[in-house]
Image (cartoon, rainbow, N blue to C red; front, side, top):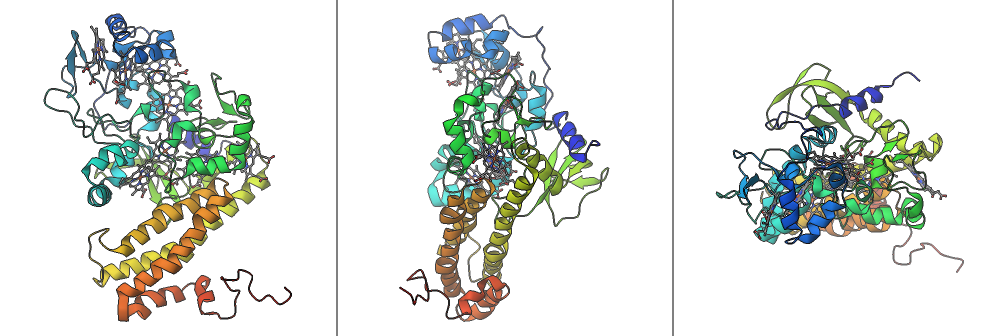
Length: 479
Ligand code: HEC
Ligand code: HEC
Ligand code: HEC
Ligand code: HEC
Ligand code: HEC
Ligand code: HEC
Ligand code: HEC
Ligand code: HEC
């Protein structure tokens, strides 16, 4: 096999420099660590907060001689620097701080969908968190998963409205994004722990992103539970097909090495669709010369290598490489191929893609078109969540539709149908359409019914004589 394009892409992604969004910090090697003040930290903290010090003692860091000060040291000029027992420290240890020793992981993590999780929802926080809940909800919910914008008070201490927080896209005082202790429990920072599905479930569970539930209900989850001791979770390296074969976990498919496919801290690289959007679209992954990454929908014009592109934050960048949805799918399929055949893998992907396409054409596109029309005609106020149909629509794509799509992506038939598309259908026909007609009034034939007529999938509504939903079995003559 000649070096395929994905090899180039993946090699590029794994050797990227960190983006220029924050000030450079000094890179460290073993001659730098083992800060002499570290012993005092350990000895006093073995009395106060003893648990934390003993977790550190059992860590690979302690074994390698990396101590408290190697991570917590700060410059006097840092906004969050505090003077503590004669040393200048910061409580927050940002990705940029870890990256002084773990450059590769930092480069992969920065610019990933995870690191951008705060920016992507920032505009929705007030509407959902503040209006529907109350400001206190931000710190305790959205921000715990998506990340907070950490505020530092005048004395260098951290504002309790924004910290403690280890959200996946946290905006740190030094400008870097995310939190390495989202997945890595401190102060062990054990990679065996991070390989467990449990590392992801704090955020990836519940009605809108039920990946925990989906995984547990899948055959993969079944085998993982039965054969956990065969998973070799403690291995120094953890490559599917070589170091273990029993079953895949979240990490196997989204981050881990598999055969020749290298591991990566960018969880989005192998994904084709944006499954948590009102309408899913296949996505290009664009990588810029300076390491910044960006996704573009398939319907957008594909940028050429070397061309200049304006990015969401307003800066412009030179395109280094573009991964097409097809290449991204090949990367994910390489994981499957360590344990399954080509035909099996392709067949599964076809089944999955068809569910996403069904959701789009039958429910997501018509619902979006109807909502757009109701806003355009000023039949709904522009304020989000002040009208019942806005809740119905939000749940249709963000919860119910997400469950169906995640269920089909990760092999839980229950979530694909009973918890997913069945609920989508019920909400669409029995809540969304009646509410839309009530809002549209006399304009219903144009704003609602004409939209439904565009898709043959709704023809059954006008087709008398089909099976009866009450009896469940339709025209029964023989019973
Ligand atoms: C003589 C005892 C002592 C020494 C030495 C010491 N600490 Fe502490 N440290 C404490 C105590 C007590 C607290 C809790 C203070 C409080 O409750 O706010 C604390 C708090 C902290 C905090 C949390 C601050 C916050 O924002 O909540 C960090 C981080 C920390 N220490 C790190 C270190 C590091 C790194 C060193 C080594 C330079 C060190 N400590 C040395 C006693 C000590
Ligand atoms: C590998 C880097 C690393 C090392 C080594 C390390 N810490 Fe931390 N520490 C962190 C991170 C990450 C956080 C979470 C702060 C944040 O970013 O929000 C943290 C948080 C803390 C906190 C506040 C959180 C809490 O649970 O109270 C204290 C106190 C603390 N560290 C003390 C220590 C002490 C004492 C040592 C040495 C025994 C130590 N740390 C070693 C990375 C490290
Ligand atoms: C339990 C963790 C958790 C909490 C709490 C949470 N989210 Fe999310 N949210 C997620 C995850 C995980 C995803 C993405 C899943 C995916 O991409 O498949 C997501 C996706 C989203 C999306 C869709 C993102 C997109 O790309 O369009 C929006 C919008 C959103 N969340 C807003 C919020 C708001 C606002 C709050 C608080 C009111 C909140 N979330 C609370 C975990 C959470
Ligand atoms: C989404 C969860 C997640 C986040 C966030 C995360 N990690 Fe990891 N990390 C993992 C997993 C899972 C592994 C084990 C991967 C494997 O063995 O294939 C790991 C492994 C590592 C390793 C060991 C690598 C090796 O080859 O031995 C280091 C070092 C590391 N992470 C550093 C970081 C740093 C630094 C950050 C923040 C920039 C970070 N991680 C953020 C999940 C995460
Ligand atoms: C001063 C250098 C230094 C800093 C700062 C540092 N590490 Fe490490 N880290 C190491 C060394 C050395 C090892 C052990 C050798 C190795 O695995 O590379 C290690 C190992 C690890 C491992 C693998 C643990 C295992 O089970 O084998 C993880 C995960 C990790 N670090 C995460 C982090 C995170 C997250 C941060 C920031 C909160 C961080 N490190 C900060 C030097 C550092
Ligand atoms: C602290 C919360 C948190 C943890 C822990 C976490 N994630 Fe996420 N993850 C999120 C949020 C929030 C999003 C949505 C980001 C967005 O849409 O911007 C997300 C998105 C994703 C995506 C979608 C990427 C894409 O292409 O859209 C994948 C895949 C993913 N996470 C996998 C994982 C895996 C695997 C783990 C565990 C090793 C994990 N996550 C741990 C919060 C988390
Ligand atoms: C057998 C492989 C496999 C396992 C195990 C797995 N996933 Fe997935 N996951 C996929 C595939 C395939 C997709 C769809 C990718 C695409 O869009 O092409 C997906 C999609 C996702 C998405 C949605 C991404 C988006 O575009 O919004 C998230 C989030 C996610 N997975 C998280 C997890 C978490 C968390 C776990 C563990 C609880 C997990 N996955 C286990 C293969 C897996
Ligand atoms: C580490 C090995 C491993 C990897 C990697 C893996 N699987 Fe599996 N998969 C299994 C095992 C084991 C089973 C259970 C087989 C059985 O029923 O005997 C399974 C079952 C399945 C099933 C259910 C089949 C059935 O007969 O009901 C599907 C579908 C599936 N895998 C798809 C995938 C896809 C798609 C990927 C890649 C995104 C993937 N798997 C990655 C090991 C793996």
